[in-house]
Length: 130
Image (cartoon, rainbow, N blue to C red; front, side, top):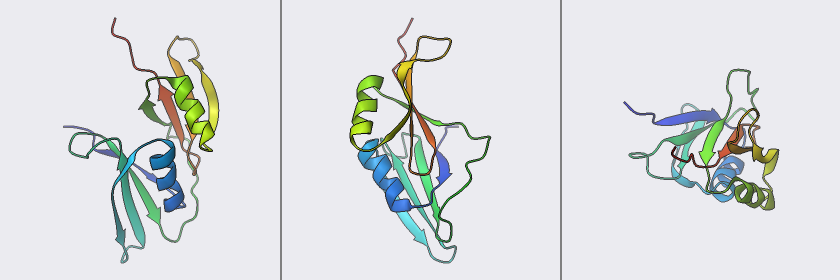
C-alpha cells in the first residue's frame, strides 16, 4: 500500500494551480473537466504520480468557497531552508501565517503559509539522522 494523494476542494482552480505551481514550485501533472458532474480535477506535485504522493485540487463549478472545517490540519512540505523558502513565497505574494522558527516545545524549524482557499501548508526542514 502507499498514499496516492490528498484531495482539497478549491474555489478558484486557476488561482490555486498558479499558487501550487508558481509559488510552491509544484508541477501541474494532469487536469480534466467532468462536464456531466460539473467539476474539474487537477493534480499537482513535485514528481510523477507513480512514485510520489500528490495533491488533487477539486473544483466544483458552482462553488466559489468552502468552510475548511475543524478536522483538517495542514499539508506538509519539506524544504532545504525554511527561512529562505518563506522569503521566496512572501516575495511571490504568498501569505506567511507563522514566521520561520523553532516549533513550540521543540527545535525543528518550521513555518506556515496559506493557499488561496485558506488551507495551511507547513514548511519543514529536513530531519537530520541521529
